[in-house]
Length: 333
Image (tube, rainbow, N blue to C red; front, side, top):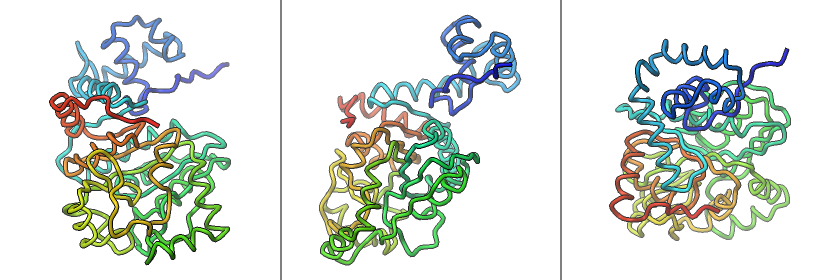
């Protein structure tokens, strides 16, 4: 008997086929037959999905406001920023809880790229770390998880090597760690180490990624980069003085997403920003209003093709773009 397996669920529904069916039936007014065709399922299964949606409170007479709002925001983000997909979670006041929620949603988005032979690049950050922890276990031994940023001496659960190893472990994939420091003492030292055959091969591997998973960091206040392995507080202050508003793959960017030259220029080991922009898919997981300037810069710079965030960030991005006239500003590569 043929197994009833739904078509790939759009990212804005967080991997939830029931929510997708609810949206098509109640939100777009499609018939059960049309929904069944869209999801590649039987009408009986769709009827069960609609009943399950009612039990879960996704719909009563009309679509639950939370689902309607977040899906509408996700679609507006895609249109405004030329994104392939977006997923928006409800706004949460507690930052730790928000990171966990964005991480879980990001796991659904990343799962869409998981298949035998896929090469998935992984950066680091607290939200990426939460994604790694929440990722459902699978067995894809022919898939590769590639560390795209240099390693640190930190024991933090969100370091590049830990995020890479954990995602590989949970998916049964091959971990390809970058065995070089994130930050070298001088540009000359960085160039000499990068020229070593083994390191050169690892760096070349970062340019083979089908998708790159990354977060975005703010430069002011509490951030993960106030660490000598990534960036000292003094260096962060200097970059802000030079016009930087955020940090991406260890590189500081200005409001338009351009890399800002500063005290750490040429000393970073790992994927360069032009290589990130050249990757076929770039999945950014980031939330919290403290990061609004950094997230906006990453979008304007064309580094993001798939985006997972919270409703407060989404509304702010859409409202600001209406006022400043820079909508659809993603320079997609």
